[in-house]
Length: 207
Image (cartoon, rainbow, N blue to C red; front, side, top):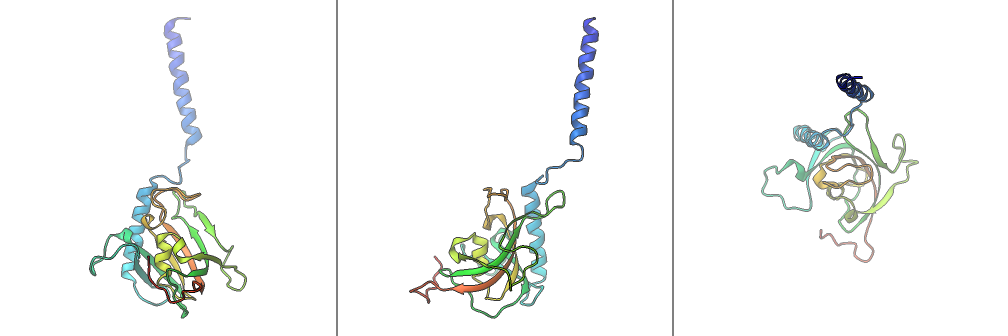
């Protein structure tokens, strides 16, 4: 067999391998494709909706600046400095302080993946929220991600909000279990109870 024929057979084998490889992966897309950019676009779009629908009623939005950094004047700052909260239910109970512990029902998910699926990464209840059977989780207001603390400091017992938290007020560039880096976090948060710090119930200073 001549060298030319061997060379030709080698080329045909290589082309066949490439075609087979393409066929095996055809239609399969990484659900986290362009994840950081898609999350940035998503929170930008949420910010626009929230700014156009601000109010105190069910279905309206609250825009809350992060408690960690002082807001410069009255002008809106960077999109990533805020938590965007859609009001689902309204309560008339007390508002927690930074030193308090709260009980809340919650479900957390990511923005829709590239394949259209929704990933729930954490939850305190299953199915549709039913206050009569759901067992709230308890946690310190100061012990959760910045976005949660920011929202909780403005909520009242009985409030149920849908929170949209930019990655800067969540886990940022760090991965967390099923949460990729640069993820916008979406939470359904239902504030059930506030438990005061024993021995210092009036302390309200945010450290």
